[in-house]
Length: 459
Ligand SMILES: [Zn+2]
Image (cartoon, rainbow, N blue to C red; front, side):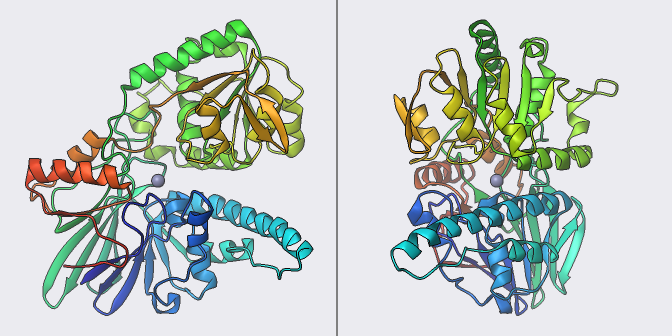
């Protein structure tokens, strides 16, 4: 029994692990690298195994850095099952198709440029047909259900509280009369997040693969975030203009909509028209609504249901989106992409960013090199569609809406294991991993390692 680590230590994207047991090969996650061009190029590198030889794929949740290379895996010959939670299957159906369309569009425009230089065309990373084929291989399961993948190999998905359907993956492996339990945390949720339940804990494991995204940071108190949002909405009420909120389609958008419903009167949102201007976010919100039994028990006391915003308009078509551009004041527009790099939000920035009376609320992480990062760092002008646009709008950066556990959350989750198992830290930048390793060693005397690319851990 062994696990091979197939992504770089210190990376926060491109999640991928290969498990070998009883002559079976099981791939845990098949994530896409995200970030600058160099990172994106890693997605084209060959898989360090033969996709034909895999027996099963197990997926913790729908985020692209965990699921994004599945269509590529399928197009390169993997024909077996992809086990995950039911809701993750539905979200992947939206997200992988959307990702495929982006890859197709990107390669079309790249190939036009290459053709002018006399260079041969390149293929997209994967196509819509690949993504659609992959969806037939998904097998959805419930939380808590024990699924026998093969004799001696069992998997169980446990609520990770991160986004809808996100799971902690527990694998029970038996080989040669010995049984070991491996627990992969997936991405753990923030226990005080607005929508999802806190991550469930487990009491026993032999090896834990623990994410470490916020291994060196604590989140601020949720009350501070709510107070900040309230003051921005009230201030915007006085200045007029529009409010633009770039948001990630899955997770962040639904958190935001829930908070806006909950504080509708207090934040005086009745004076605004709210637009959800993202087909992907609209579809994802519908999936959240279909699976609301997974989280609403915690949100609502009986008889105290929080309704969807009464003044929300779902902008599905490009025409719906363009119509918003004609509104001079009174619109709150939630649109993708979350880092302002593409999508419909770019048009709204072009129409509103130069206007003093408008507001931009940044609610998510802005990676280096993105337009969102430039704005957050105080750029006076940004380039949009080839033109320079002045940043005159009020820019507010609201932290505290993270879907990840902070350092305390990670430590508490580990502390619930009564036997203080061996830990491999994954999914975090180097500083975060070092800080978390130090705490786990000093507080629990834990055996902590940070495996490197290609390293194998034997059970
Ligand atoms: Zn995630």
